[in-house]
Image (cartoon, rainbow, N blue to C red; front, side, top):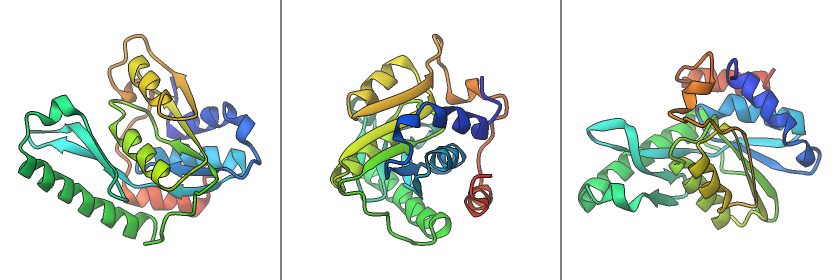
Length: 208
């Protein structure tokens, strides 16, 4: 059990000690992954940036998703889930989420482009993996940008998703794999939706 995302980030960073001082690039996936990624980057003395990825939500159940899209357009869609939606509806959902991606880049990253990752080791950090769709889209983006080594680091994930994601990258670090995994929130004592304002405050304070 983690007290909050800061606590999870500190503990996660210690498990990534082998990457300390190795010119790695840490990407935090906003918004929930920012505090976690911030603590990781601080401990590893690594560069930090935000990689903006959005879940593609079902129209009648926004909490559930059928895939995700990353800021370069890299898309992952669960085939079975997408069977229930028309191509036209999927396109509209993708466009709506891409609009939100552009907004977040402007607000949270001040419109700056992604750092160059060609030939670098990249660590992708979030506050946990549920279905893993946003992480899969993020991995696609990093592969497209020719990162030399890809690492996924999260405080919690279900066993099957952790194994699936692990097969897509060079290294994966997951602190907790609960036997009865229901949701990322179950391992956090203090869990809430992170706002734009909090993300900006975390970045401004330098992950203190």
